Image (cartoon, rainbow, N blue to C red):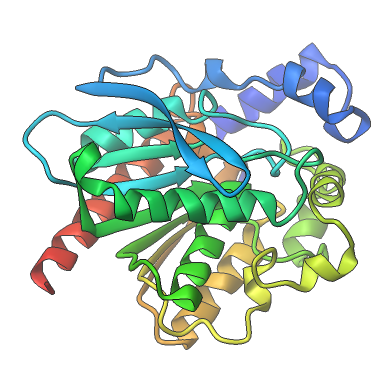
Length: 314
């Protein structure tokens, strides 16, 4: 497929504005200069939005809790934002989280996990798991149903959602109903065809992914840990059903699709969808990308169905 015309327009605008490449900046500079919120569009109203702090392994973790209209207990999605484990925050995904809460009729708990390089691997993964566990143990206090918990995220957040699903299975402390992986990072490797084809010119570059990984990992050995690279897990059986989205013009396309395939081979139910013509980041650009909006609608519908299925199997 050709590049989606709306995506091409965004890339052309960014090129016209110019500015230094992400991988040439310090983490602080990158955080200050990277703001895609204008591409998300207007935040839609949600019945209740509350910023809270919950206990984590190394101090409090800020979360934002979106509660839809109606009577609980609602199913709940624990959501992890993207940004290569280095940038991004609760604002980055505010619009998609609002849309998911309303359309899937679920509570969404958006997690502001610790960022690298100040907090390297496994800090983000540990915070992400702690947040999911807190939700399971405190579901009643947020009008949520502890038997219907999903995890989800985009990019590095998709990586964290996949990792939390692995951790939950391995530790046996909490039970998850679903995992929603939006163009997830799944492997510390740059050897795929999509890394070669889409190395430059499509928003997320190979150089910026190398920059992200180098800030996140303490050493090369960390990159082989399944809690950093879930694709390298020896066993993916017993994991919750998954939704996996990838974008055609995204360096992460192939590793996301390889993870979906490996989940299927392990007997996990998977719905995988490649968004043709799309660049990385489309999920949080519903204000300017028709397919960005459609991807959120599709994710919400899949979530809703998964939650109904988990009720039926109780």
